[in-house]
Amino acid sequence: MLKFKFDYLNNTLAYQKGEYWYEIIEEFQGSFGSQGFQLDNGWISFTLYEKQIKIFAKKESLEGNDFLNPEPAIYYRKYLPKQRPLIFTFEDKDQVEKINGRWGKKHA
Image (cartoon, one colour):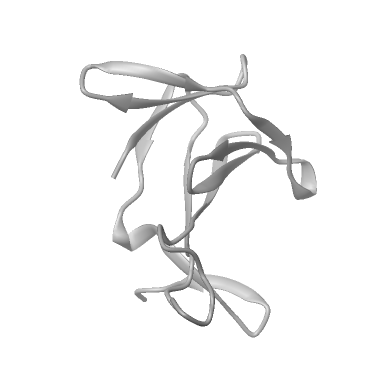
């Protein structure tokens, strides 16, 4: 899984490949005041709170999601302390799924 670096004051996101960091430039304004970044196979959004940052991400299946390939997208959510730069990665324990209209841990 990729390692990401987010700076909330400058609103920049980068991913690490080898020993170098590459900035992601395609941004979008998300729901409920979040700020997001478009990835090759999904997106990441950040919601800032007083002492923490909520990170929500969607990773699409590389083959797509249709009736020929029913593999659904994978969603991740994590809350981290408000620091900069914020360096993080997603793990299986961060996966969430929507059940009855609410997001909850997938591997609870």
